[in-house]
Length: 65
Image (tube, one colour):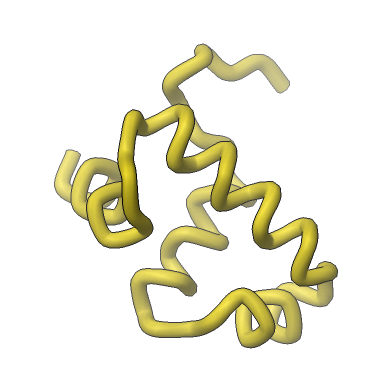
């Protein structure tokens, strides 16, 4: 699967959606069946790809497109 540098993956979008709904990394990891370090890795990638400094800013940028 090829993604441009600034586009987030389907899984990253799912992680961001859950974060935007108020779940913690632990809550997201439990919901998706992945480790909290994987959630953190996805969030770092999301922030980098969207040029955001917070989860809230990333969510606004991704979901208001």
